[in-house]
Amino acid sequence: MRNLCVCLHTYVYMKKIYFDNSATTKIDPRVFKAMTPYLKDEYGNPGSIHSFGQTALAAVDEAREKIAKFFSCSNQEIIFTGCATESNNLAILGTVNYFLEQNKKVHIITLAIEHPSVLEVFKALKKKGQVEVDFAPVDANGIVKLEPLKNLIKENTVLVSIMYANNEVGSIQPIEQIGEIVKKERVKRGEKGLAIRFHVDAVQAINCLDCNVDKLGADFLGFSGHKIYAPKGVGALYIRRGIKIEPLCYGGHYEYNLRPGTLNVAAIVGLGKAIELIGEEKEADIEKLKKIKNKLIAEISKIDNIRFNGNADQQLPSLINVSFYKAEGESILMTLDMLGIAISTGSACSSGSLEPSHVLTAMGIKPEWSHGSIRISLGRFNSEDEVEYFISKLKFVVSKLRAMAP
Image (cartoon, rainbow, N blue to C red; front, side):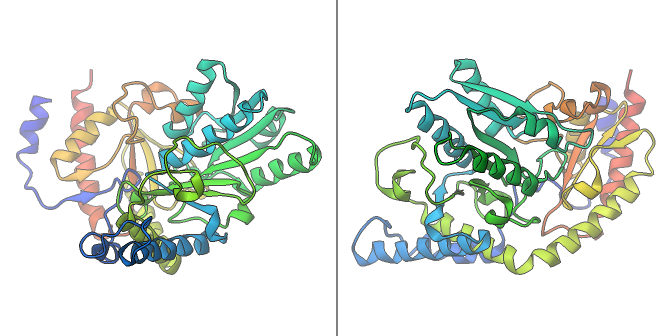
């Protein structure tokens, strides 16, 4: 590594490139502008009945309306949270606790490639012996196998939880088809049967995919602000009207008694503005992302001994996961960082682990390849002009690391 660092000093620093938008995004200036009044002058508590509070409440209501419009649902079906992790936990634990209160035996189905905000909840529940959990298999591209998923459903299955798009490889799940499977099971059970619900973690999907909740068949859908050019510390959960869950916290009337605590007005306003911008600019953003991605893929393909993880036709237009044989992913990340380039080796929420990616492992990818994987995730503020600089440094780094490899 010392020799590599010496080599790095021979390169003139040019500019910074941020290719880690799946971890977090820059706040859009238009979002920040919308938030500013509620960070300065309009500081009222939306729970207060005086004019200061009512001004804040009106801003929250407007943001809720924008989000409901985006998901084609009613305003009352949107619950504000602190992040997508909280949204997912509220949907899952709220459902489990609701049935446990009725002394029901609970069975849940999910995927082995889920984000930790879902996967770790199920692992904890399973460890405590509170629920039975089955993990539906995925194929070599990280797409759920529908027939095995369908066969896992039991009479006491109360929740199917599937992510819309994977955060490491970008694989897009057939959510509409899964929604239909859940719907058919619900009809089959009838009104007297145990309810079955469908939860969708849509964190990575909001920017690029259709999120009409009725079309998807979702009963719960969670997302986060900082993935869509809004601030960190705010998220939301769609809960279909009529569905009952238990709250995780107690202490206030906010959010229909499901999420107590004074609302983060400025962040909620930012979330509403960010959703509004996606609705207006999605097609243009996707077209731009596709051009950058295709250019990157064409150039990366010229490097020897690599493999792309996931099928580009079943993948987000914003994400590339690629493995370099005999070049460790963490070393690629750290060395590129010294050159002003930010990428990831997978999920930012589990990047501290030295274990092979649980996503790539579930896809059947061997450790010698998964350890050399990196994630390149694009966003609204990237450009085609960044590709040439990135590729030149990537080739340099991979070549040097391979030369040093035992």
